Amino acid sequence: MAKIAIVGAGLIGRAWSIVFARAGHDVWLWDPQASAVSAARDFIAARLPELTAANLLRGESEAAILSRLHGAASLEQVLDGAIYVQENGPEDVLRKRELFARMDKIAAPETILASSTSTIRASLFSEGLPGAQRCLVAHPVNPPYLIPIVELGPSPWTDPAIVQQARALMEAAGMVPAIVKKEIEGFLLNRLQAALLQEAMYLVEEGYADPADIDATVREGLGLRWSFMGPFETIDLNAPDGLADYCARYGGPFRAMMAASKTPSWSKDLIGGLHAAQRERLPADQQSARQTWRDRRLMALLAHKAGQPG
Image (cartoon, rainbow, N blue to C red; front, side, top):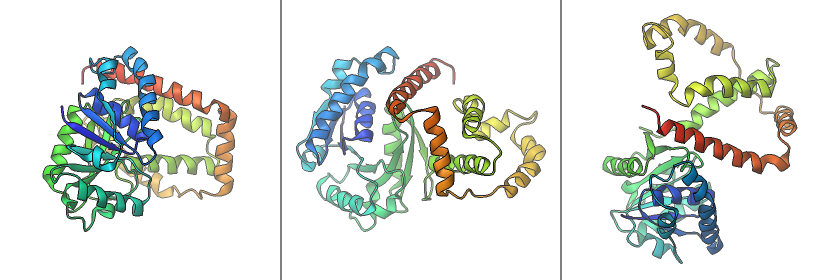
């Protein structure tokens, strides 16, 4: 299989390494801090038994996956011969511009250069580069080896053929690409998440509900459906004659409801209260264990969905 370069071997880089190695690729990792590469390999080795138990390694053995992981001593080495680069550096536009300029000079002309950024549009780090047409955003949800959606966000000058090549590569690796057709702040997932979070904060700030009940409403209500279908399919199934019928029935009340809603203040008092409520439910010293629990629940859900008809 082809060589994949992981530039930045931290939290996201090591997760991407599992995705690509599980798909059969040779994965090379480089990080400015050399210790991050060995730490990533240790993390992956510790994670693989759980993924094996959940049947999430696509039939690959743990030993085979580990054998596909390689540490690179330099940016030049990690890019040499790579068909695709997944960059995972800090969320700093100036540093990304500098790094992409370096990669654009070093990597072969046909190499795709993608960033895991969750906030920076591709045009902001690729404008003016000789190889700007091969740069794009490939934004995952952490951890991508458990949550398969990946947002592919081209700049106005990204070659459409590059987007399709990235899409094919992701699909072959078991990911589910969503194309952001034109640049927008926050891409797709963060904007959808922000809309729900904004309304959740408004409902708490105005005294309509406690944080725990908001979480319960999503966890035990909306979230159950949303793990299998999106908002448009949801409303299509919730009216006798489908989506148009739903909008005819509820469009007016929905518009009135949202017109009466307000943007939350994001004040210190609001955030402090939400934080205190969360720490009462989950003490700080239990966060790490809860994160592990979350990942195991995601493994179980993903394994369940994989065994169900589409």
